[in-house]
Image 1 (cartoon, one colour):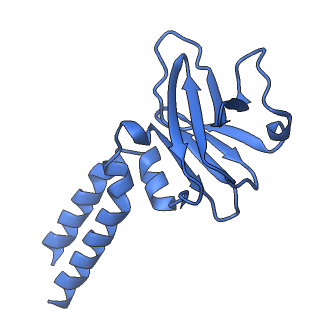
Image 2 (image 1 turned 90 degrees about the horizontal axis):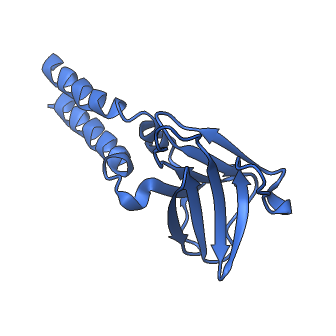
Image 3 (image 1 turned 180 degrees about the vertical axis):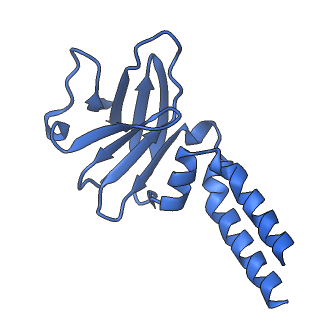
Length: 160
């Protein structure tokens, strides 16, 4: 009986940790979270169009002004305060992650992500940014792992 309770507990914990991954909808194409070291992370999971060079642009809007944070588009320069404290990494199977080092949001902000002529936005209210979850982000980057979790649980169940 103790083993069954333990198995149930682990299954419940894994299920809760996977909620951000399994419930990914149109709004979660862009996610914004604060890392433990105070870096701000913006994940943009837009799939690039075929037969185009994959361009990306991250910006934010406060009121009526749009501020370019980081881009690989030739001829567009980011705001000077973001030129040396941001970097972008490519995510698998597609998407980009912007990291702004030592940055916190000080007012309501709209984050904008553009990938190969497709644009998505996310409005973030002040004090509503969640801390980044390592497990959720890991599973989000490798969605095929979501299949393995139920298989592992069923194997554990059969072992007992």
